Amino acid sequence: MNSKIWLSSPHMGGNEQKYVKEAFDANWVAPLGPNVDGFEKDLESYFNIEVKVAALSAGTAALHLALIECDVKHGDEVICQSMTFSASANPITYCGATPVFIDSEKNTWNMCPKALKEAIEDRISKRKKPKAIIVVHLYGMPAKMDEILEIAEKYEIPVIEDAAEALGSKYKNKACGTFGRFGILSFNGNKIITTSGGGALVCHTQEDKDKAVFLSTQARDNAPHYQHSFIGYNYRMSNIVAGIGRGQMEVLEDRVEARRKMHDFYINLFKNIKGVEVFTEPSEDFFSNHWLSAITVNPEIIGKNREDLRLTFLEDDIESRPLWKPMHLQPVFTDAPYYGTNIAEQLFNNGLCLPSGSNLSDEDRLRITNVIHSFFAVDKK
Ligand SMILES: *Cc1c(COP(=O)(O)O)cnc(C)c1O
Image (cartoon, rainbow, N blue to C red; front, top):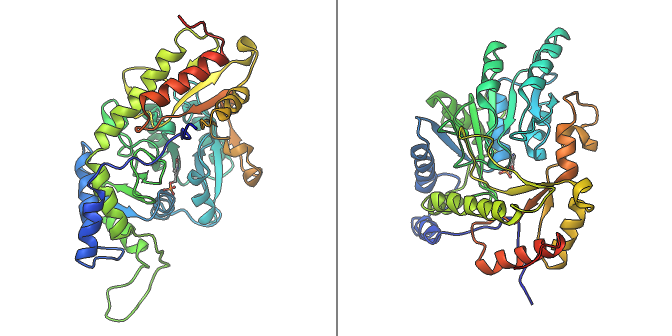
């Protein structure tokens, strides 16, 4: 019996348990300690520009705190890329604000600068100037940051980069997560590196970081008793979890390389198959970590659709998954405004994410190849 091939599964480096053991040995079994400090330092020195990082319990928590620091309040509007995981948009609702969803563009599948500009101008004309812009680097692919930042600067709206899937990705040689006023990272179990569950907020000033740490540890004022002037949250990363993160940081570059090799494998696999396009960087300006490799399947050329392919993979116990269903099509967000031309919807209809883990074996790749060859009736030489 073949074992299941996952889309993306945890891949330990080896030293994670050493750091966790240190935490146990010193009894730092708490949401603070040397691993939390160490993991933050590891992340800070990983980025090629100076940043301050706050380690938190989840990427979702990081987004929530970023919105609070951008002063998003009840009744406000926040712009968000439509094609993304729901965790990009949910924190807007936690703040009592409304998301305004923006379509994708075809090259990067990320926020369309044209639709963004149209949305901002229309919201301003309705006296609802957006308080922040959440742009996502989907599947590790950098968004068109030059165009997006230019619009954001023109209208003086802060940008929050959801880089949950994009640790290790770069745009014009600058790391994703470091462009906006804030960047957020995720270390959930299926991400490029994992702490089992966790996230981080990337800041550009010590003040912004300190505020995030303050809010994430129940917003205690400086007093011997428990005194509170703000609503706090319990969002800090635990010292055990951070130990896993320190071990994973040692192998991050290897993981990026392995994911990019999986992408190369798919480029090669689909090279002679008409009607399938592998999602790839549009130019040298974009460097994706290829967290997930994805394809679009043209049913008019192939005569079968992406769901047929997904089910065929499943018969051999291989996981694949449709692209993120756009947020403006989700039942929970039906009332939210949307700007665009349904690019994201078309991508969702035809797109499929393929097994992309850094821990896949040659044998796994052979099984994937066999499914693809038989599905597309490729002659084996
Ligand atoms: C995983 C993910 C998140 C949420 O991160 P968690 O750590 O799971 O809370 C947010 N946005 C995107 C695009 C993600 O893929």
